[in-house]
Amino acid sequence: MSDISNPFFSQLARVLEDEATKQGYTVLFGSSDEDTEKMDRVVSNLINKGVDGLIIVPCENSEKSIAALVKNNISIVLFDRYFPEINVSYVALNNFNAANIATKYLLESGYKAPCMVAYDLNLIHMKERIRGYKKAMEDAGKKRLINIAYLKQDSPRKSADRLLPKMVDTGVDAFLFGTNMISLACLYAIKDMGQEVINKIGLAGFDGNPVFDFLSVPISYVQQPIDVLVQKALGILIDNIANGNTVQSVLAEGEFIKMTP
Image (cartoon, rainbow, N blue to C red; front, side, top):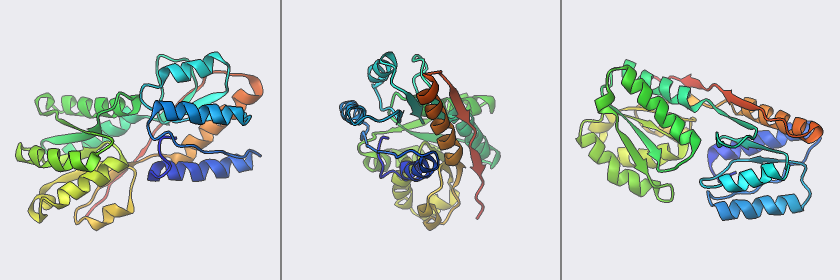
């Protein structure tokens, strides 16, 4: 996975370990830290240890590595992210629908110019969330107001401190945060803008976090069905281990949790 310290992936690890134990498997974990070379080393080490199969959260620019595993008939399932051009099993959230629903919620709540905050990454889950946001804005007749603030993944808080006040100054009245870690970085920046701004702004994101409770305005969010995602990924992997690689793909729907004051 990309970073086990990320709350989403920590929860994933917990559920995966529990589900695998029920099936008689032991799980070994490794973090790529969104670095392709490190991902390759972790994968190589796990294969050398004789693992039966791999569930991989691929990082940016790892297409060649994943394609090589497929070519060598390694049993793998991609999780959370995938590469449409590679014929390999994957399990992920329906990110387009999730972001589309969250954006529509902000618009239906009366906000006129929601901005999406995303990572500057060329990965399918982020691109699909951006696409869902854009489609909701276009359907609402707000194509001209589409606004995306891209944060650097290695310094999200610094990027948020620089970009978000500018967005508010140019008329943005709501934010859709592209990940839970983006939410945390942005909340620091929003808190520094003062209570007057906080009271006026609409907020939505992905995956709830106890930190959300410390802001005086509600933050609605898309809850990813981690139990379902893990069960599907593990089921596909076990099937591939037993019967050979048969490509299966799953896009699971999230649940939008509306928070009220």
